[in-house]
Image (cartoon, rainbow, N blue to C red; front, side, top):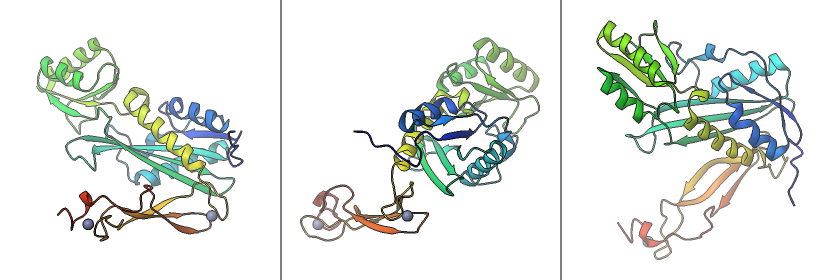
Length: 284
Ligand SMILES: [Zn+2]
Ligand SMILES: [Zn+2]
């Protein structure tokens, strides 16, 4: 039988967003907890920085998400607010691959609680290129998953005056590119990373929302506050042959941000010894 989560079941929530992220987040939370979505009203989240670069983000992604959440709470009076923040760049584990890092921050203002999850995914079209002619433009567009994903055109990387965002059709792309090329000899194209223009990003946000559901169902064993999570993992799982410590995880330290209870959970992978293949002594 499915358990009812008394912390969230049936509660009203809103999302601090302008970019259609509710399409990814709302169905998952209504299914998991019967939560009811209510729009926060107009909120100019672009004030805190834009992906296309005309406004730099001054806060860290998490600080920015917290700021958006408290603004949306003040404006709407709704107790639960979810804010999301995406960052794009080299994937931390694969430097030659682009990565999309999505942070979701749930603030329960009625219970003074915060739950944060992060997902890093290589499933992104994030890219940019200076194109000299129509062939360049078409080649980049194809690589950037155009036209299911929108593009942005500028004269140069940091030139914002004639920037065109949300380009979705080939005829518009050709027209805009030709104007820039005839004016300045080239056009700078980049992927439009605003969620509503980028289905790949919407999928990563949905993946982060699934993780948020897991975290919302993770309760502190001492005070039952939701959001009980792993703080650190410690290596040192012994080798099954020589018993010396390996780099594999021996235990994970779990913690509650509300009551500061912590606990070390040993053998999180389910095994109490590591294969000698991963041992620096047996298999250097
Ligand atoms: Zn060994
Ligand atoms: Zn606790």
